[in-house]
Amino acid sequence: MTNNHSEIVVVGGGHNGLVAATYLARAEHQVTILEGRTELGGAVASAEVFRGVAVRLSRFSYLISLLPTLIIEELGLRLELRSRQIRSYTPVDGSGLLIERQDGRLTRDSFRMLTGGEREYQAWAAFQSRLHELAAVIEPTLTQPLPDVDELRSRVHPYLWSSVVERPLGELVESTFADDTVRGLTLTDALIGTFSSAHDPSLRQNRCFLYHVIGNGSGEWKVPVGGMGALTAELVRMAEDAKVSIRTGCRVDMIEPESGSGATLRLADGQTITAETILANCAPATLQRLLGEPYEPPVGSQTKINIVLRRLPQFRSGIEPAIGFAGTLHLGQGYDRLQQAYEDAAAGQIPDPMPCEVYCHTLTDGSILDPELRAAGYHTLTLFGLHTPPDLFAADPHGSKERAKAAALRSLQSVLAEPLEPCLALDRGGEPCIEVMTPLDIEAELGMPGGNIFHGDLAWPWLAQGARATTPAERWGVATGHPGILLCGSGAVRGGAVSGLGGHNAAMAVLEDD
Ligand SMILES: Cc1cc2nc3c(=O)[nH]c(=O)nc-3n(C[C@H](O)[C@H](O)[C@H](O)COP(=O)(O)OP(=O)(O)OC[C@H]3O[C@@H](n4cnc5c(N)ncnc54)[C@H](O)[C@@H]3O)c2cc1C
Figure 1 (cartoon, protein in one colour):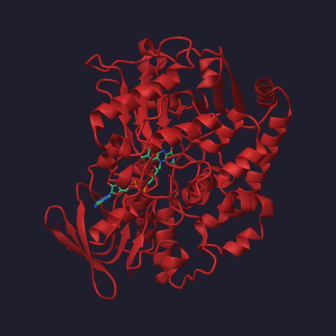
Figure 2 (spheres, rainbow, N blue to C red):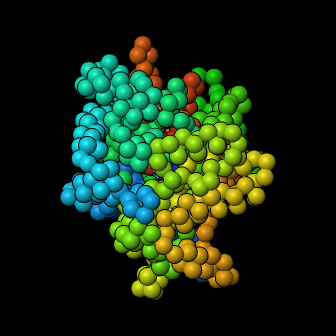
Figure 3 (cartoon, rainbow, N blue to C red):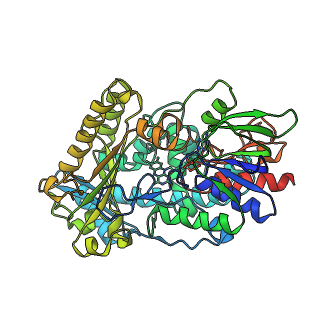
């Protein structure tokens, strides 16, 4: 190491670390990023996963909703986020529920066919507009100091507030919808990466739901053109332009806080570096480990499967594959099935068939495919399986991963009119292009403790009643209890997901302190 001091050190070069570093370097701070892996971007990454198959898959995260336009514009990112024409398709017994991005005749007819009347559609439409009201109040505060909970509550309809924020989400879902499919579809947003039942008193499912429906004021999930790696490439370009010093393959093994402020960081190769301010882009539990403090690892809950297909398979329901796969395809996500899957997993069994959502990037953006594969009709599928916490894999990582793969593929196969296998692309060695990652794999790949994709349970995006925020770090929701050490990742109060919020808000706290 040439330099053993930096004014600000960012531990981790995930997307949030890059965002924070760029804001601060542009404000004339001297910033160094220390990234343990050889690649930057953390969970925001594209990779050619299968040997000899030229497809840049979004290997971990895949859709973007919570990255505010403000951050894109302030950083000057050249990033295209494309809408999908279809929001979701949920096959049910040879038929299915199709929901357009903007509810129109197709959506209405589909609700009527599935549920036998107008009631569920009307309830759905009213529910969506209430969620937009909530998003309009909360989303603009995400890039501001933490708002006061009473102030926010006063701006939201009391029933909506109490049913999203104070009562287990299951009550809202059950009182709003009668149909099992529509109930399950709604609950899914509460279970992404979150191991919970609809009625969990901790309300972690409510917090997960809230983050999934407020992004940019609409809750729409968009496709990053070029894949997730396109966002990281832009963030790296901006950080380099701003003269951030970036070191990869540089794992921090220990942080020793100085009395007052600042700390000494010990690296895996034995070197040390001192800094006045440390921004932790790693998970809060990782930070505690590095500080030598006791910590409880969080629990992830998902199985991620990346697939390349030679062609899209036909659906049993007869819907065109280009429509059924165009939005988010919900599988095994009826409301009762979700509860059963949760109970199975809590009892130590991999849910089979596994509830999952599937997304085809290449129907909206073919640019991640080599032109020859694109012309030949190749496509990618991303499968995100629910209710698969790390405990299920601990005793027999290999065997249980195979069982999880089979359970997830059974879910997909159950809605197809033909076997999936002949549709799978093969890699150079003749192996089918399927990559499976359990929470244990996510932890090993990305250092996310417990494989938790949000670095821990999501927090309400406001200052709790009676809480006092006296320092800039507390006001911005990035405090750690150590002056001079701030969270700047998914584990910040408003961090979870690909949002840049953890990084933006940590940078704003440092600048406010200036
Ligand atoms: C499989 C999967 C699917 C997901 N899908 C979506 C999605 O579609 N949309 C969405 O919005 N969100 C999604 N998420 C969540 C989202 O990707 C993450 O919450 C977000 O990317 C976290 O960003 P981050 O920069 O805070 O942290 P990370 O991406 O975790 O980056 C932290 C970085 O810190 C580094 N690091 C950790 N410890 C050390 C150390 N000791 N020394 C040096 N470096 C260290 C890591 O190597 C890593 O590069 C998904 C996540 C996963 C894993």
